[in-house]
Length: 235
Image 1 (cartoon, rainbow, N blue to C red):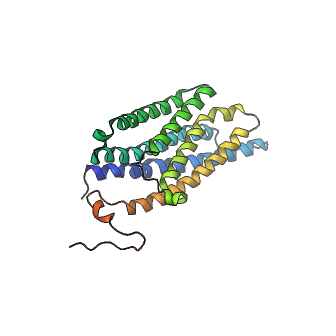
Image 2: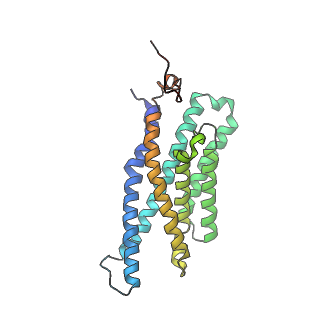
Image 3: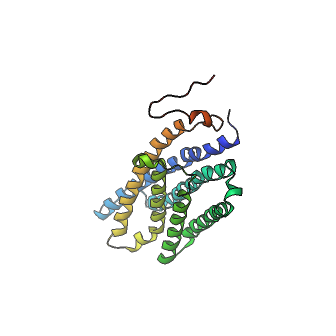
């Protein structure tokens, strides 16, 4: 039976499935339509695709970034604060707990200001601060990073995808100001990589859900030997 702690653990994958992946599909669709319209127009022909698709792509892309970075913060918050409470870290390392809370607040504030920044300097500053916050939070010992299999790590895929989304938002205005299309090409390459990471997130996330037991089962499940694929016999 699930209680509050287990329900909290499911918020991260639930929001990813309900919000992030549907938005991802819409963004990819609008991106393809926008590119198709631009190529047809560049060839001197009249496109049947309405010009509003470009605006929709940018707007929904911003919502996707908010969802991705938000669900990343949520995915970091659960293991951090649940282990802070369960392992009594608050009384043992109060300064580190305070520092983690401060980094959370500072990073979220930087992410909010990123969307309000107008100049390239401030966009770069707030994007960098948000990314640094994710790195600091992700480096805490309570976070399971699957370092022994980092090539198939849900953590590393997620952090890198969040970085790419943040960078994409920070450089959106530069795309329209660059007549040589260097930023546009970089945008296409970066977000194509992000799409692959999202596919990897879907696969590794489903795998991790199979591996993570309910909290009351954890002391028994974690006694199993993953190499020999055996578990102790309990009466």
